[in-house]
Length: 313
Image: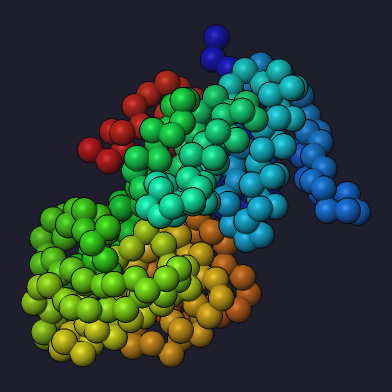
C-alpha cells in the first residue's frame, strides 16, 4: 500500500513550499516552528504523520544557522512521530563551500552537514545544484541532486541570440558552462582568476572569443557578487556587446545588491531556491524563475518510486 504523501516546511522558504504544494495539489502540513525567548528553536507538528511518506522543505538561507537548526529539529520531530520515511528537501544546501581540506587546520563543513542531517533521522535528501557534486558521497543515505538547467535553459533560449557565448567565471564552473553551451549550441569562454581570500577574487584573463558577442556568465550561486561583477566587467572590457548572468542560488549577502545594481550587467537571472527580500525584489536587474514544478515533479517520482534522473535525460 502506498503511503500518504505529506509536505511540511520550516520558515526559510515558505513561499516555495506553498508553490510546490500547489503543483502537487496537496496542502502544506500544519506545524509550529517558533523560538523560545532565549532563541532556541521550538517545533511542534500539529497533525498526525504516522506511517506517512514525509517531505520537509527547508533551504539553508539567511539566517543560515537558524534555518539549519529548524530543519534538524523538524526531522527529529517527525521521525519520533513515526513517519514512515523522511526526505529532507533542501533547495539550497548550505555550508557546501568547504568540501575538502585545501588548507591546514580547516573543517570540512559539507561533511559535517551530511552527518547532522543523517543523525537527525533523514532517510534521504533532495537538493539542487550542489556546490560540488562529490558532496553526495558525504551521505550514507540516498541523495538526489537536481539541476536547475531545464528552468534556466528555457529562459536563456528565449532571451539569448545567435551570438551567445557562455562564460564560466572560474575554472571550477567549466563543466557546468560547457554543458549549457552544448545545449544552446553556443561558444564557451572561461575566466582565469586568482582568489586573494574569502569573498575576494581578482580577474586575470579570459580564455575564448567574446568580442562583439552577448556574454552569459553562469554560476551555481551569487554570494557577495564580487566574482560575477568582476567577470562581467572583464567581458565588457574585452568587447562583449552585452553581459548578463544566470545562477541557481541568489545568496546575495553583504554588498551584493549594490554591486549588481552598479555593474555593467544587463540582467541577472536567478531561481527561487532562496527567497528574495523586499529590497532585492525591487532590483530591476533581477529576474526570478521558479523551480517549484521541478522540485514537485521530483517529489512525485520519489513518492511513486520512479526515476528522478530521467527528468534530465
